[in-house]
Length: 392
Ligand SMILES: [Zn+2]
Image (cartoon, rainbow, N blue to C red):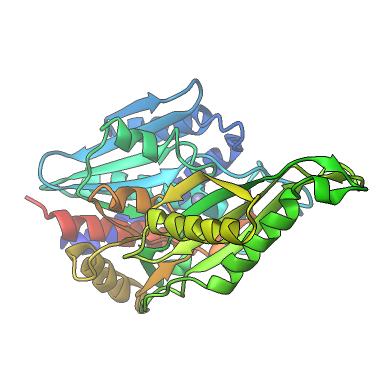
């Protein structure tokens, strides 16, 4: 039988196994915080053992396990990183969030779509590759920790420690129903602007320097200045959100300090440093007009804008494979939010976001995944790995 037909049949026959694996992953509670991904890693390790897939676990902190299974050896390496943590269940569920329920072909439970469903599909794809294909490259099946709170103990840590060095990666964590490939992401700068004044009695404001009025003056300038836009075919223009503001103790006290937090999202070709420099210029200009005003900037977090070359083999193979398997094209898209794809691309990995399911269900009550779509996703990922890495 031809390899691609064999793969299709193999995956289809293992549908009950996929359902069983996803059920066990959902039952393993890994709400982050606190995470406790070790519970889900145990489930995944047992699955790998069943198919004699070698695996290693790495934990940056107790209980925060990253599990990496390996299929094939040598050649180019394709990383498939699902994440094992979920956001907290919250209230208002019609189905128990940690006792998976199947209704009309949908499996309900926390993590069903974000990201345990795609994680289970990847594991099944790995098992299929192990049994059916003799790869000329390596596939890393990763269940990573800590994605929902920034990946410091997860993929970011694995890359920093050089525990994995992939050439390619498909991050199955954007939803998109296999119709979208994330190839560009905006950068992010969260910056705290602190305004220093001088406290005084509220009945004699002229004796103090009002830190809140000065902060408002600066923020108005920021708003009026607008943002440097460069045209991009997949990304909307840069944005600025004034997300937090803080200051003052009582109506009758001139506030001596006030602060605001701004959230800038910028485009490839722009940098966080550039935005910070603009902000400093505006602060200096404000301080020239208001001689007693004094501002300080504190960067809370900064992530680069990233983009992969569009004509790389990974994107082309995903597009060809998806069209053949589902009859629907997968188009290129850019994201205003940041995924771990960014952390890979910024280290030179050809990484894209590509996944099954509807992203709008992520983090919601009654989160679910269409099981049929997950089976299809497992098949597409298996075929992509075969076509990208080749077989002996
Ligand atoms: Zn996710």
